[in-house]
Each structure stands twice: as structure tokens, then as C-alpha cells.
Length: 312
Image: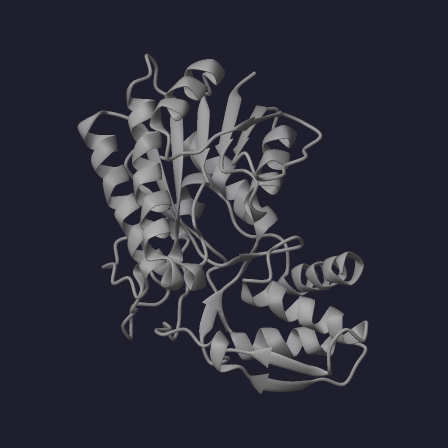
């Protein structure tokens, strides 16, 4: 049985990925920070801070995984504006610690580095849907750190002959996501309004931006396919291949509400720099693995809304 290790599994994606690995017959291991909580019915949970390289080395020697999914990151764009140093430390130095630790092993596990569609940044007219070959013009600090991780990953893959693949994941959504992210934020606000915990007024940011949304359960299927079939040194987009205006998402969510809701722009939710459209070209991933998204947006929104209705 192949062993899979998820580094940074306490976040939104981790438990979904572990579930998918288990479904596919992998022996699952997961790391979290000592102060984080992670309860999973399958697999072994270990504490790890990726900023401590020696700890990374000894954990890899102990587990000896066949597959490594590097999920640990400071993944909020908003937090990155407020705390750039932390974002650089975790997303760049932490990733290098992981790659270096893998390089020191006596065998070659297959490693998937998780990046973001945000790396493309300012997309010019005629560049959408955006392919992996497109120029990167990161428009925020989080995106810049992920672009840097990607470049270093591709250098390590070639220089040290490592089995290292990179992903640029576009917006993924689903039940259990933190309300830092737009779909979860909207669903939580609606659930609060329905329970009478807030006035029937939704606070929103830029509704004109277009984003590519994929259900997290589809995203983790792509990750498992790529760690097994991806080509070393290559980068793959993971997304739906279809951008939707945030306004459209908001309308869908409000339509599912039992209350009459007003919408107000909240200046605190407007980012210093926002990219007008981000849409993935997923041809490369699809041709290699046959993967495509299966869960409709409507279903994801309904389940995210129901999650907040029962978890407030």
C-alpha cells in the first residue's frame, strides 16, 4: 500500500484530501501545527512546523512517504497584505525546507507543491482562459510568494532530479471553508440573517470581479491524480475552466435564502489591488489525467449554506 503524507492538513483542503486518499487505498499521514486541531477517522496525525527544517527531515525519515502533498501555506490574500513577513516565511522558506528535506532522502517520493491561480495576476485581454505558459504578473503578496515557490520548485526538479510537480489551483469552495473566502463569507452571512443574528443586510466587496470556482472535492481528486501521473518539473492548472462574476454567485446564494436581504458594499472588503478576471485553461491537466470537475456550483453553494445553517 502506498503511503501519502499531507503537510499542513489542518486547513480547509486537508481533510477532503485525506478522505480522497483513503478512498483510493493510500495509507494516509497528516501534519498540523501543535496548536491546530485535526480529527480524522483514518490516518495518523503528526505535529510539524515547516519552519523547523530538522523536524521536517526527521518526520520524512520516520514516515517514508511515497507521495507528499505540500499544502502548508499562509493562504489568505487579505492576511498577506497585513502580514507579508509571515507569508514569505511560510510560503517560501517553509517550502524550501520541505524540498531540501526531500532532497536529502535516500529515495525519491513524488511531491506536489500547491500554488494558486492568483500567481497569474494581471491578466491581459485575450489571455483568458489562462494557460500554464502565460506570463506571471502577481498582483498581491500572497501571489508573489506562490509564484516564487513555483519557480524554486521547477529549479529543484531539474537541478536535483526530483519527482516534483506544481499546481496552480484556482478558487476552491465547499462546506467547512473559513469565512475569509468569498462564497463561505456570503453563505455565513445569509445563515446569520436567517437566524436573526444580524440585520438583513449583507456586506460585500468587489462584485464585478470574475473568478473560477471549483468544488474542493473535485480539486482534491485532481491533486491525487497529479501526484501519481504528473510529469516532474511541470505545472498544472486546477479549476473549472469557467469564470463567474461574484455578483452572479451572490445572486445564487441570496435566492436560496428564506429572508429578504439588502446588499451593501463594505470598504473593508475591497482589496488594495484586485484582478478583474481569473479563468483557468485546464486542457493540460485534462489531457494527462482525464480529470474534469463533476460537482455543480449550485450543489456546492447549497451544501456550504447548509453547513453554516447547522454550524453557527
